[in-house]
Image: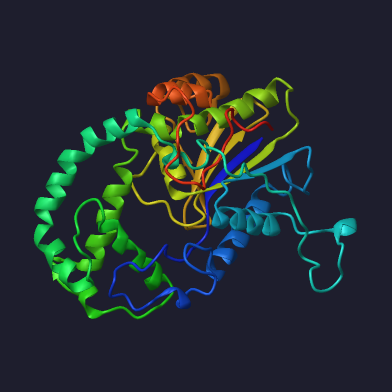
Amino acid sequence: MMQAIWRHGDRAPGDLPYPKDRYNETYWPRGWDQLTNKGIWQSVELGIWLRQRYGSTVLPIFNKDKVFILSSDSERAIETAQGVSAGLFPPTDDRVWESSYLRYWQPTPIQTAYGTIDALLRPTKVKCPNYDLANENEESPIAAQVNSEYGQMFKWLQNTTGMESIDFWNINDLYDIQREIDHNMPQPSWLNQVFNGTTIMDHIRELKRITRNQEFNSPTKAKFRGGMLVNQFLQNMEDLKANKTTKNALMYSSHDGTLSALLYALNVSNDQLVPYTATVLFELYDDDTVQVFYKNTTNTAYPMTIPGCLQICPYSQFLELLEHVRVKSLDALYSLCGTYSTPVTSSSSTTTSSSTPRL
């Protein structure tokens, strides 16, 4: 059995990184927040990589009884799932339905739960008061330190960018500059100016890493944001072993926060940002052992060791080690969060029903 969850491919910024930025939406042909052509190709490449890894065993062809693909309802995540499917399941033999223009593509179903609360694939969008309290308690001293250490730089950036104010809580807005850099858009020279021995842009990258990881980097916060996903992967294994499902290839298309929460919940995070199309893999073998891998920007899947076990971990021990992280239903998450009735999400584009997805 294989299970995979990936971050979507390269995308456009959500808006101008700062008021004086010259690269408005016309520079992004598919629009703000959308997958770029580069992101589409990254998605297809991931599908090809998965086919090379699993094509001779678990995934020789698309089989609806064996394969399940679920995406968050974000357009970029859905399109990434489509791209991965195109690379993973090229039509062969009697599945070649068109002989010229589309001969290397076939449609595959992508599931999504549009308009509902997606605690599985967009957990950061779920209203969770107890998470907010835990995060605030841990974040406040770090925010105070950052605002003090970088106060001079923040004030200078405020004048340079045209932003009304800059501090720990909105410095990440400037990280969208990185997306422009990734697309070879020339940048103003001030990004290369040095503050305390480091360029402004490198400071922005490091502050993005610090602030993003701060959202998940304790056992409590990781359980709030990653516990339902851990449970889903374990439940999928349990269902297959109990013959409750025939599906042995389950894949999920999601977001960087989703993968970060999962890696921290598994206690295997490297404290780095999750790059585009990074993928976490769970493999369950016939000898009742489990192995977890992480593929970042390379073509190598690096084995991850769950603390308390070997890299290749006995199935029963794997379940036991992660039992304390599991959040087994949306109702259980509400209780954990201190929200005992259906909560309002912080975004209208969040997904998942009142129970984990039925396979």
